[in-house]
Amino acid sequence: MNTLFDKIWDRHVVQTVTDGPTQLYIDRLYCHEVTSPQAFDGMRQRGLKCFRPQQIFCMPDHNTPTHDQDKPIEDPVSRKQVDILERNAREFGLAHFAMGSRDNGVIHVVGPEKGLSLPGMTIVCGDSHTSTHGAMGAVAFGIGTSEVEMVMASQCILQQKPKTMRITLNGTLQKGVTAKDVALYLMAKLTTSGATGYFVEYAGDVVKNLTMEGRLTLCNLSIEMGARGGMIAPDETTFEYLKGREYAPQGTAWDEAVAYWKTLKSGDDAVFDKELTFQAEDIEPRITFGTNPGMGIGITKNIPSEGGVNFHKSLGYMGFKPGEKLLGKKIDYVFLGACTNGRIEDFRAFASIAKGRKKAENVVAWLVPGSWAVDKQIRDEGLDKVLETAGFAIRQPGCSACLAMNDDKVPAGKYAVSTSNRNFEGRQGPGARTILCSPLVAAAAAVTGVITDPRELLS
Image (cartoon, rainbow, N blue to C red; front, side, top):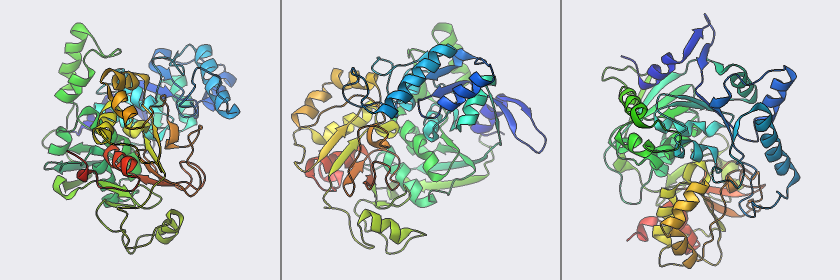
């Protein structure tokens, strides 16, 4: 019996080259401003049009500022990239969700929320965190710029078929433990290369009980274990989330789609190349201490005394010592957002701790919705008032401080407690020190000014 991955992959095979790659049909290509310009130039030079333009969606997110989006972008490089994407979309007749429009945000937040990412699809984008969309029950993965051009020209891509891995998470998550903590736990267990060459399916009670937002967070971080992508079988949670979304099927087409989507699961006798099982009860709120996402600990634990290659170099960069605790460490910046944790559920979690408290004086906080739709939900639910009363301002949507390609840069030597996906050296600004965590841990740090176990603040 085939795995969920096999079912979707096999349905999209156009042809297989003997001892070579598979020609795979692609249902959806997302383009942002950073990895698409050379692909468009290549198409132009070859005199080609996009083969299926209605299946390609363009949106700036990496370079967009998170304030004053109604004014021209100040940084000339960012402005040029955003402008070029708009021109390319117009020239090639592609849908373009412009900066400042109600459709804009972070592509990996907007795709699922508009119902553009659907179960059973193959989805690609020139961005490693395309794995996010696998939470919808899709085969979604990041590709290089030359491959973006390949999909534009043919709606197909040449790919080696990855191996399959199933990670089963049994039990019930404790209070204060989120999907982000689960992902950080898995990265520490598997290391950042432990899933290299695999497509991961997440299963078990923990995954079944995750909300759609939680599933998107978990799949988003699959790439940080080295996986080609991550996915979750669609179920009632998926269907409930998608029903009535702008690009989701409607009427009888919806009923037909759901009937097909219900077949998208691994059979009881499905064989995976690798199987791993973990217990929910072993996971507590997590934080990272190093310069890759796998260098993490439970928030109450001590930094290990030894690690792999670059362990001591990494601690030197972070200003930490082997064996020390991070609880009570003073921090400077807090970032809530990114394609990892910029959804409405993440803002609800942050607000649950901020409510009735005040932002610590020593903390600069950037709270950045993943889309204008999330921004609207925040205001509709009154979370903006809760956060503003506590001393927090909500910024405009974009990738923001996840990767410092815009104005939101953490200064050298400063500590940023961040809900984003990567803590590499200089990722959030040259010399910036990043501590990855969940929205609850970020909120706890934001109101206390130090690394704090959120369970102490949860009512």
